[in-house]
Amino acid sequence: MPLTPEEVRHNARLARVGLSDDEVSRFQSQLSQILDYFERLQEVDTENVPPTAHTLAMHNVMRDDEPHPSIDKEEVLANAPQREDDHFRVRAILE
Amino acid sequence: MDPLHYLAAHEAADLLARREVSSVELTRAAFDRVRALDDSLHAFLTLTEEEALAQAEAADERIARGDAGPLTGIPAAIKDVLCTKGVRTTCASRILESFVPPYDAFAVQRLKEAGCVMLGKANMDEFAMGSSGENSAFGPTGNPWDKERVPGGSSSGPAAAVSAGMAFYALGSDTGGSIRQPASHSGIVGFKPTYGRVSRYGLIAFGSSLDQIGPLTRSVRDAALVFQAVAGHDERDSTSASLDVPTVTEALAPDLKGMRIGVPKEYFMEGLDEHVRQAVRAAIDQMAGLGAEVDWEVSLPSTDHALAVYYIIAPSEASANLARYDGVKYGYSYSEGKSMWENMEKTREFGFGDEVKRRIMLGTYALSAGYYDAYYLKAQKVRTVIRREFDAAFQDHDVLVAPVSPTTAFKLGEKTDDPLQMYLSDVLTIPVNIAGLPGISVPCGFSRGDNGSRLPIGLQILAKPFDEPSLFRAAYAYEQASDWHKQHPEL
Image 1: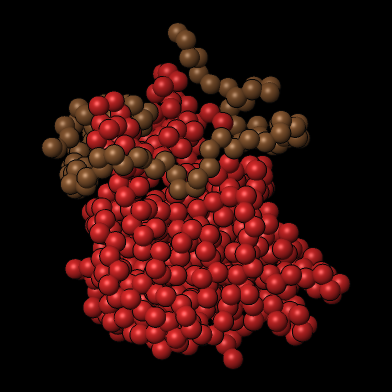
Image 2: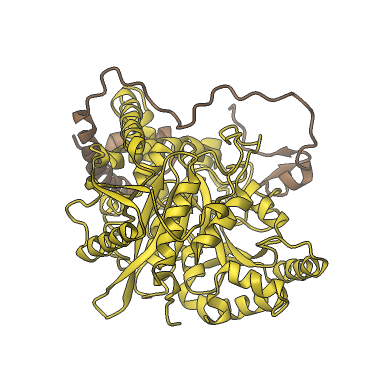
């Protein structure tokens, strides 16, 4: 079932990705084609088959809670697009 | 003997040990080669010549002290998906164009401890999403065998740098074939270890249940040496396996007596290039001649479903992993908008390329309310089916052998307008990541391009999880019985 332009825009909003009108129409046809291709999975019988999240048989990896030196604050903030004192600066979230 | 720039890393190490060449000389020669070739190939995004020469001098001192390991003083390229302290790491994306990591990836740290000389950061598909290198925001990489063709992807720059003799080896990452497929298209060796063998700490995340770091090299022995240098447990990656790493160099032997090789029928599918089919079959016959028992009737019936599973799971994981690029903490940031949300959407609109946006959209869709069961959960269940089929095949076989890619290297621009066609070029490498297996690509022949160029073909060898010794044994014995890996592009 092909995606509508509204569905593409809704999805882009969920992902917080701005799209031009041109991208909306291109992605509409490309994503529809790819989603069609995914339909083949419905042929596989997965009754009573558990899902695999990852391939290692590991759960709840624990370690001792010991303090270690962390990465230097200045080095981290050096990448900040906008900084104020020791903080990342962003546009107001609450209006 | 090969010219200096085409020596295998272990051969260069022998020269260093005998003091016939210094690491500084190897490093200068590598940069001369980069200057001569990289304007047209574009394998590198950032060169670190000053640091490299300092590392080379330090390596020469280690060698003089008798304190050298097998990789000490050998110049290498690092895919730009791996964080390097103080050296710009872009992931070939506009959104990270100016990002300078405050730390080294675990694998990079290990190579530095081994005395590596880092030439620079190698080009790739943006965020490792792609099969051709053409999704790099900074321009594509050419194939050293035919510059009108792609070197494969996403480790396009690492593959071209090693194939063209600019670097002695490279470190790449493989989420759905991104080491093995470019190695195959570029005529070199590419190895993806078992999921969990190499810590993902400092590897910029794409599909976290699939991503694995590994080497691209000019010989199987080199791949074994680099693997041993970077593998091992690291508590900063909770999926890092706490198992001892086998000394795979001890498994390198010239015969295959007693080895049970399985050939999965489904990998010789319709649409497989005839030259690829013939070269791979000839390689398998040669392995039988080395003493292996070959079973041509292995079946992995769900192979055909692996691609759909992958293109649901990998974009789903990517859509979550790439949520961190919001223009707040690092990287490109749009700041002219009226609100924080507008700034964030524009940051991602201008910062990400087409393929990255496509995969974020796909993943967001597959995980969204109402579609989760039909796409993501279904894909995870089929993932279990695929794993079980591999488990069954490995009951009676030590390794499985198949082609790496259905075709040889395609032309630049050939598939860029048709994402699904591009995805289909990963059809034979993806099942390995889905099942978490180790896999290697070894050169096994050539076909001819329409302009007469020679186009490399790769043989893929798979083993069960954590059985890297069997994989290396099979790869090495075949390589030593052939001379494909000794052929290099004329550049």
